Image (cartoon, rainbow, N blue to C red; front, side, top):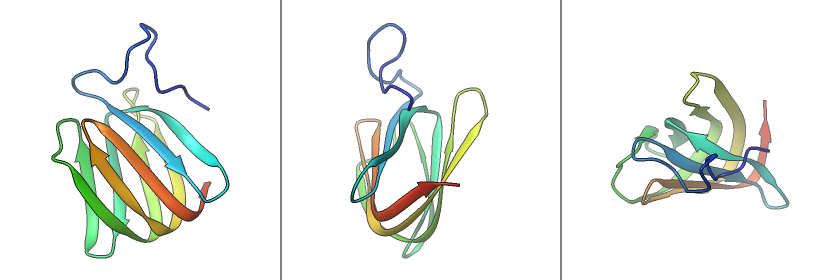
Length: 99
């Protein structure tokens, strides 16, 4: 699993997000990203650094995390919520797994 801290020991940079995806019984993935896209009950939401705080209910579907390198990490997340605050994104799902 990726560490939320950068190599300099600090949290996310100005244009980065600290992301954590967890299920009821484990942490599925955590790390630093530049973007996250998730399916909510009212449609897809895209999160970039500087996003206003938000709490959204997840719909069954995929959460896509884009790293600074351009690599995309995809997780299936069912029945949960997404929280954004101060460039920290937490996805909590009843069931979640990398795909």
